[in-house]
Length: 347
Image 1 (tube, rainbow, N blue to C red):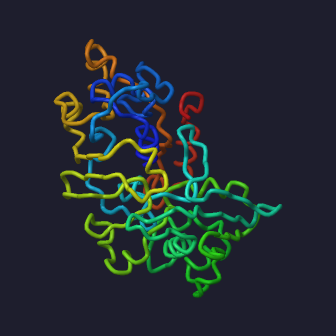
Image 2 (image 1 turned 90 degrees about the vertical axis):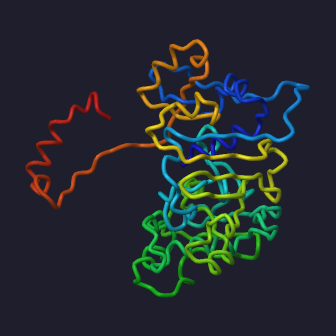
Image 3 (image 1 turned 180 degrees about the vertical axis):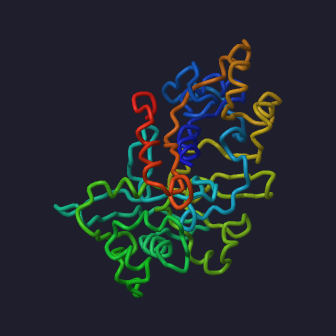
């Protein structure tokens, strides 16, 4: 899901019509194919000096690797694989286009000498989409909610570096106040870890560290991310969500970086993989990720060939054997398979 966040960063500076966008969008990190001879993405494009933009900037994307299925939610504190929209929220840090963790809601990050206690200074202009302040208390509550056994978050272990986080999640202690996350006022979050963790700020840029809006969650329960209920703190708000059909995002006017976002609206149709590149070719969407079957055909077409670009996908694919069932419950079989893998060609 890093794709949408990176996409939002890149698209924030764009304001051109559909085909011109596709021509210059080599820097959007996401135009179609993943390799296979496609052109490599270049630097982030910007509107030409004096270029007049359309009154309302609307971007449509979907299909391929994006939104083949309807999201189950947008609640990353409960499920990292909910297929939600990361751009509805903003974390303490974020990954920039070079995948470096940089300040976001936290404008300053410091630690003690041992890197076992980290302090995040929260921006004073950070607000939820309803206009209320997004404070250090929101991050403390959200992280402890994720660790609460009652939440049953499958990725609670993501925060186990925090002091007593694992013990609280596994019901070894009952007092959430013993978890090493503490708001020291509205704009200072102090996180005490189990020991030295120099990498901890990087974890704070991941989806699992996003905040949730406590009043909405407590009022609406599992329905809090529906369009009528959701309150976020990110660059976009969920204007509408017709399940299994389409989602519409609007720029969040309360977002601290709203002036730098040129997109007014993002339309995300839910398109099954079987549709291939057809929605793109029919001018129903402005961007898609390509399947191998469409790649050569579109690259060889003089019109669409210049619109195919390569982008890096920040992910790892791997296979895990089921070690409790035959044949992989036999250690000799597992050992044989491990030795049979050509590690020169398979990484």
